[in-house]
Image (cartoon, rainbow, N blue to C red; front, top):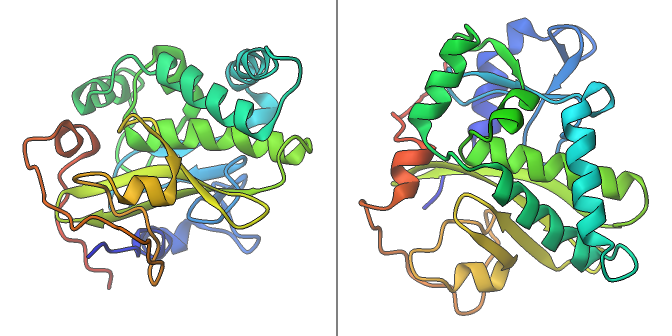
Length: 238
């Protein structure tokens, strides 16, 4: 059974660093499930880097959006399917180094300590990141398409913890209620139903959300996910 309280935990840990407007460091709101991705500060359930997103002032993200748009419009116009397919393919190609050790090295080069902010741009520029960085990158691009009217669904960076550790991915809820999972780290893009029928499927379904034909999880402790996305201790908020 997955634990879905990571957003609650990060909110609790950092509540003293959020001002009366709900802003972290006076400019970003704390990110989390079903919260806007652009303008967010993505914090962990326990200490790690805090990833900030600022599309308006980011030439890196704007350039990435342009690349996705060119690919999405290759057949004539941007559709919901072409946008999702393109952002998955482009972000997958960007993140060539999916090692947690490489993330640690990047943070050291930028002198970023636990609970200190660093722009998502730095991870995109270096092509280095794990599940959280990929999910936020996919999410902010899809969110931009929603704001521009190309898509009419809802975008969320979802994350939870099960016995394998913690993981993050993008959940796109279509206007008709269908759910598409976009998980670059696990090389998966498809419907929630399809995702949950996979062998060793991650716990993508939200609490009380049941999927017909859902596989019983058998955990492969040698999988790259455990190594790359982290092996986390139990955190109990005060």
